[in-house]
Length: 134
Image 1: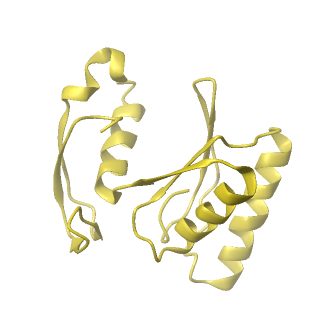
Image 2: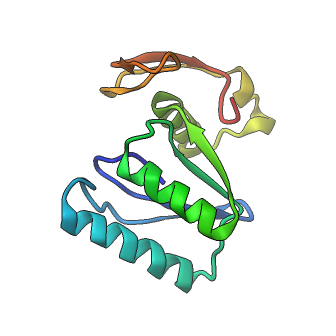
């Protein structure tokens, strides 16, 4: 479900990913309305009902609360993902690197701004290890 700023979402099925367009800052009411409408449109277009919904680990992000509501509606499993880890996983996927390629041994330095850290505080950067599934 992505973060709260520069929001997008992605549907994944059978190894294929369908990424939404950039929607914007979800604290903007019009962007939040567009996010909901685009999510419904994509789910309808692609006949998609999620089994798992990944959300940012920050519990107060609007995208996280939308994901939690959708998970409850669909009976999907909700998976919180650390902000910086999500960036690392996206880079690995973008580079075509999967678990079969040894991504579980990947190490990265993520310098993207604030994200919720493992200790519940906001971190400005993070060294990540463990690849896509960590």
